[in-house]
Length: 275
Figure 1 (tube, helix red, strand yellow):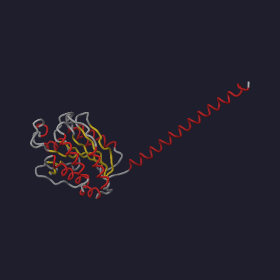
Figure 2 (cartoon, helix red, strand yellow):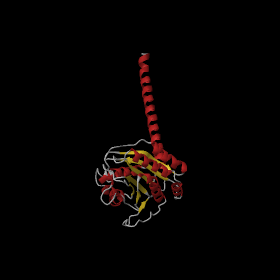
Figure 3 (cartoon, rainbow, N blue to C red):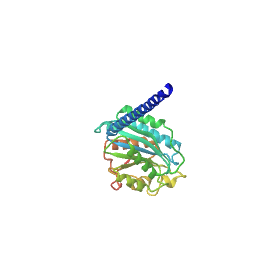
Figure 4 (cartoon, rainbow, N blue to C red):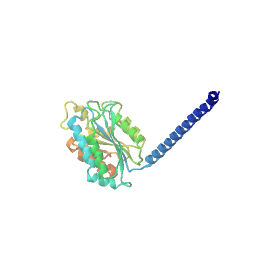
């Protein structure tokens, strides 16, 4: 009888323990959600002068030597004192950048996610990370349009806010996979995004990729007509891969400082910088 009389008490104790556990879990979850929301709101509210997606071509026409020269050019640009000076001259003195690599329709990857660059040290570290990262893809087709689409996705998910949003598309050939790049460009323009181009000319023309790297009218004109767009959009031309670093430096300075690139004769009101 004593055992039977005590059974309801033990059951009540077990039930009460379970209720307390559930209450504690609910409290923990609510607190975690509130903390996450507060962190996200604060983080998202941080403003920078520029949101910049660096979109680098790593398709089949980019052999190992070209790839290394392109990477080293980006790294050198972020260590250039003129770029740092331009960065410090902005209203907030900082930009947020992400580095992506793209190739075919299904080949895009975030190599370096959103990073705030505000001084010599953070700029150098960003360049070092570019050099250290493994190549995302190789031996694939070239879908500039898919690269632009992926760049837009990164801008939409970026944790920082800026009045200017820019996608830098660098490449050595025309679009040969996926939809037309002009279609992706027009979507970006409608979102208030500017697309600038860094054209890397291949001379002498590669026998394997001659029509790809040197389309009719030239690759620079192809980019002007099909790739770039938006407020202040321009094309920078690197005459060869060895001059890539100087070309990307000029382009970064123009973008960060909102400098108007020098008008080149015959550019049909779309500015171009040549190295």
